[in-house]
Length: 274
Image (tube, rainbow, N blue to C red):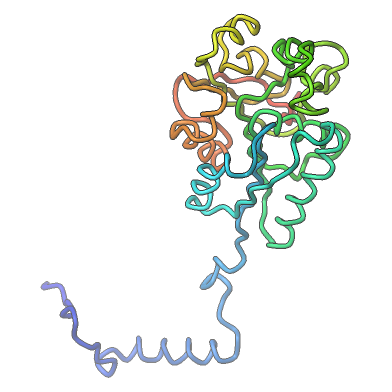
């Protein structure tokens, strides 16, 4: 039997299709009465996921623009926050910054909530949720976070003309018992970490020891509860604009994991099976 086809560009004569004609009339009537099934417009009830971006110390929101654009292109509602990273201690920065992002997500009716934090921004997230319910977080990606502190922080805090440059927060990221990373507990939310392993500062790298990104050592990026970690030969500052890193950020927020065989997997802090 020859297949019947309708010539492209010609109008359809509904009089030759009585069943279709009746169906269209019924659909029109239901539409006028507001009784069309919800499945016809299922996208109307689907919320846009919200991604809150938090820059690192000495930076501002411009350092996160490349990630912001990638997330917008991927369908996220992105909030690129600014905060005075050198003005206040980490505890103050956390409670003054993160609620602004959460409020923006709520105002836009965007959910679920994700976060992407560079460097010290990751400590703001950990500090904020240290004693708060983190179940609202669907996923977090930290780029070069000093989760175990940095020996570089202790070194710089001993130099008179440098120790005050990074403000109160800069003095809280060492490896001694007074530092914020030393007293924060395991993470309680799905976390992926991207670490850099390239440095162009031999002095800093000699102080840090081992693989590092010029600011943070690879071992320091780990924190108990992290789900996965991936590393690239990029510097600390370049973590926010390297295309490979950005692709992994988007992939993690969309799928809950990183892509590739080089990914290290750990026991997630939000794993309720333990």
